[in-house]
Length: 201
Image (tube, rainbow, N blue to C red; front, side):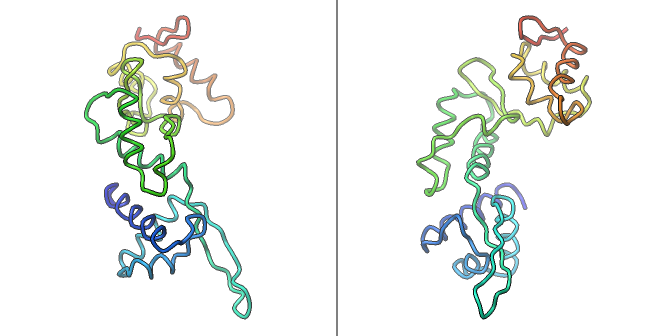
């Protein structure tokens, strides 16, 4: 499914559940399918989207059935993060951070529109070209080779604060306990580090 179609299905699930007074913390696949009068193809998509954005709850149906059924509890952070990344990725250039946060909030479904989005949810998907602006930069699309990743990062910004560059090094250096120390060593190897600032050699 394309990101746009995932967003479309997620919008429909949330709107349907809200309209039918179905709790977003206890969504049964059959209830959502029935409410949406879905065809079989969309039914599979609904199931997939619920799995992506939910925490699964397994419950036992009361007697006489007593069979197990899966209910989904929409994970608020996963949903808000998705709309944030979709909003950020639609912007071609850097924008004032306050403007982006406002646009992100307005993109949220009605059930979540009172939430104040937190940039921390998008860690590893953006950087600050200037202290007051933000721009899309997905770490997942950068090279996994440390030397090349540093070249890409310095291609968009000459100086990085250590705390800002670290999310872009996670997964590029060895993962696991203590990866931060390994990332700092990679900074020393491929860049200049002075006063907490990582600069191109």
